[in-house]
Image 1 (cartoon, helix red, strand yellow):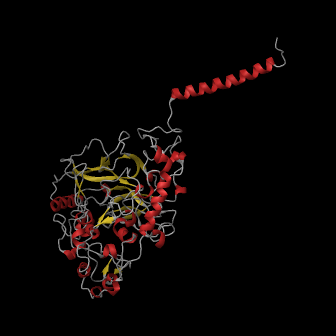
Image 2 (cartoon, rainbow, N blue to C red):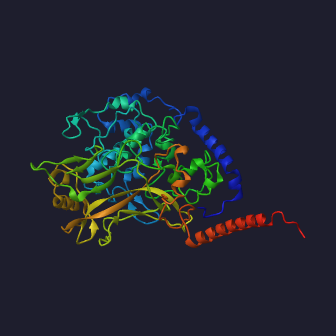
Image 3 (cartoon, one colour):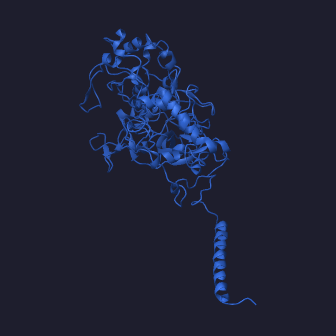
Length: 539
């Protein structure tokens, strides 16, 4: 598996460097003392007069926060969490939630009141415009609430509800307004539940999108994630996704696929390395033979054997072409699979779910390129790659990574041969979830987004890659050698690698067996000669 020679010193002293530097990092960060991933707060917010309320709305809480944290609002508005745009340094593409189509609900644009409920601000109702610029439009509580009682209502463009409202629609369940005074007095560092309130529920539900992020990680057992489990290191997301000025390390658009810088030295990091190597170094194993794989395999390839392992299924197939079917009385249909998961909804079409899913593996250099809405598709050779990962075995910056590959069918313009914006959410008669009519929904999506639509459409199969990097079990649950070095190797078909036990060469095999046969023949001949010549005296 080794593609480059390891230097002598890294072999000889790598483990010692890992243990010394990691111990220093843990002590400096407070992990060895406090255990919960971060030291206790240095301020009791319940003692601040400005936080004692009452507060007319959530924006008033933000105004109180900014009275002390004077630069926080401006800092946040410079991040991708706020802008939802990302200028890719390698591909030149403008990406982000406001720009790309995905394999789930299509585009955020035209569906703003619903999709922007996960924006870190208040009131972004039209994504053709930039997010609000007022300081009090920043939502401090969504990231810093520690009570668990703060919740952005799903249809209010980022606002919590200000009055009792039913949710889900038609359920009879009523959501009450949050107690802003109590929540404001109990703010603190972000935890797994804060980040997960959006990232666990992407794509329209718990675990739908990523595969390795769902609500099971709020309080996971050690066997699910050794880093996040209270039985393990009890990490918050921010312990790996470090931040500086509210800019959070880690990006699925430009991944740090091959971090060769080794362990972060405490006090000398740039807070940008959300990688395994920043803690574990580049020689993390006591067995040098395992370390010989590091320049070929991402850590996650061996250490995340399956995803969706916490009891929450992830969607692996979504066919929008069947959406809109109604029963004999003209009412929406809901169907379930044998596990009780939705398999058909009139609003969304057909689904397939997966649990304990074995990843798909590919060479990856960290760069992800997207098929944007104005790019012409190769409709004669489906599936269309909504995104594709770059990398090759000839590139020293590439590693073999695990991925969730989402599959499905999405609408496209048959004349222009481009993907289409889908207007699915809204109480008006133009949204798919209200009228169950694709022609109306696609026409409205075009008009609301400004993206052209000829009026002719069909559906085409698509795929989308999602890097797998969470749900890391203890080391003893990592893949064993036979998972790859066997006839049914997980990495079968990947170019550029030779795996003993899986790969073979017919002529090498024949020569090897010939040598074995000759050796056996020599042994037999030697034995026979000993027997024949036994007892003879030398002349």
